[in-house]
Image (cartoon, rainbow over all chains, first blue to last red; front, side, top):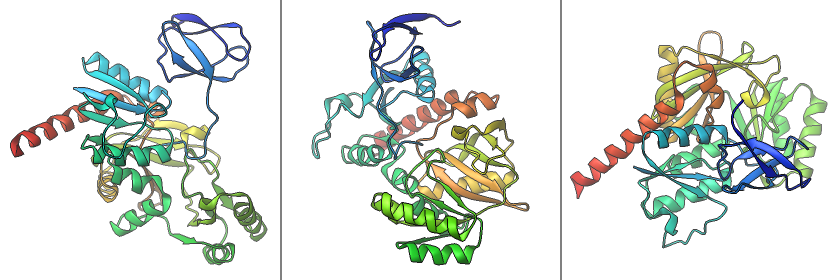
Length: 59
Length: 291
């Protein structure tokens, strides 16, 4: 398994494991709730609830 | 080179590109489009040192405006504002393909439910109603009957914003359970895959199964023409097989390639960065020659 680090889930307040190589702007799924969380900073890693899907998103 | 990566969400696609760029020793300036202010005259400081900006905005509206700002600032951007403008809107996309002589599904646009109903009756059932802006197969409707058509049109007209009152009706193409995605750089295919599903929507984002596809001469020709039609760049060209030929239904301008990268042997992010390096080098050479 890839290296992991822990960070605080902003929804539940629990410590969750996420991949160690996350980038700012990346989305991770909370293993606790399944919610999408956005990495807003690294070192230390801070997570926020990710924005909801918008109609004009895509490729 | 210093590559500005314009983003609001780092998907696996962007992560692959970031890794490739960094491994080759390029500098990367990540530009979160949500955090910047774009003055009509002065570029934001974050652009000071970038040689090229790669537009990977997830939101089409942001992509359209920011590429225009970048061009006004004389900052090279991939893809261009022109390409973004044509590809972001299915009406413009279809018009460009038709004008360039690229086979594309028969499509009509109308602005009232009555007008759309006339097209639907003429095309016959099933036919397809698509939002003019959108992606990943969302809000696409395969219309199988008159009653379904009436319901969908009423919903769009009552519940939708103004863009949903632009009714884009397209003939239904009987494809063999799959469509084809070709990733191309300035019209040159670098990788291709099929997307298969029992569902009429075969998008990878909808769970379509992907498999490598070998580009034949006709696909190569159509991809080149389709790319030229929308202004070129790094594009995802979508085709369907019609039995004796192909039809191009869409060209995407902030193309995702993670599913493609998994499906093919080629190293897709490496090929994209090869192209980007060559593009920047050519433009630098051109600027030097004309200085």
